Figure 1 (spheres, rainbow, N blue to C red):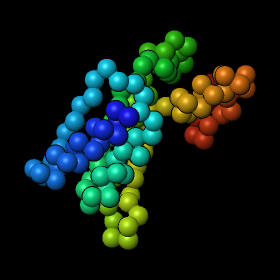
Figure 2: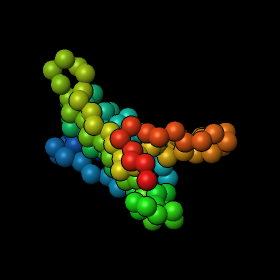
Figure 3: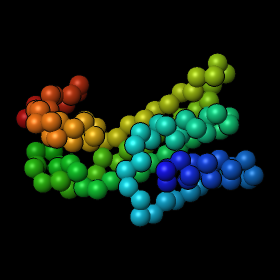
Length: 117
């Protein structure tokens, strides 16, 4: 809800002044960043969404979480109505998938591009 409210506010600000920046504090994971950046394209605007996260990943070769996965997204409107959207994070697997695997007692399968140590 916080992400949606912030996105609607930033679009309103951009309509008025050409640019909008909103910062939400004391919030939590807002899901897929691409959802929020793509909302801006519906108003013919470029959208950018970014979030910090709790420490959830170890450094390469480590076991103790020392960094978050820093998700971000940028979306750009296009002439054909299908926006171009980049939605990424710095982790090899989505944190939600890791939690779901742990909850169900399933092993994590190697992800595309992940190195085996």
